[in-house]
Image (cartoon, rainbow, N blue to C red; front, top):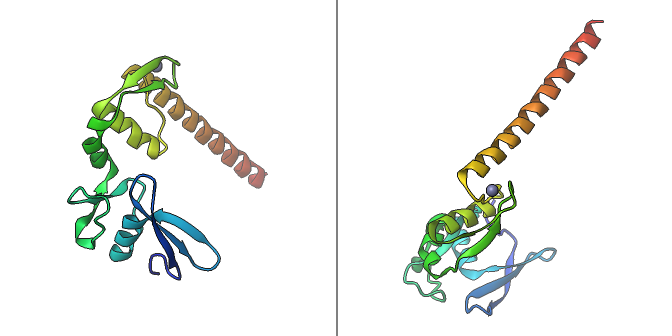
Length: 158
Ligand SMILES: [Zn+2]
């Protein structure tokens, strides 16, 4: 399987942010994606993962020469951009307290969110409490399954 097999480029246009987008179609489905991402995925013949992003080596977002494109982990990419990011206010999912993150901690929070992880939390204590609850939840499900299995066995033996 090739990436974007059967898809044809219908249109390439400049987005509001000045970056190029590509409109592709296979006759049934249509997609609008980042043009440099499309180019790099075609070139590598694989789709980028959720944590990967396209970096322009020379910093010019419209220089989509394949030599200028590289795959970068989103976390690292974020760290480069984070200086421009302003502090963001969050509410702790454990205690509800509002707090502000910036810099590297904001960067981590964003990349965790993108990976659908819980958080961010106001402090390690809350993160620990929340994590323990999730784990307890899991083990109670496992013990329920174990009980059911035992029940099934005793039924079969009867
Ligand atoms: Zn908290």
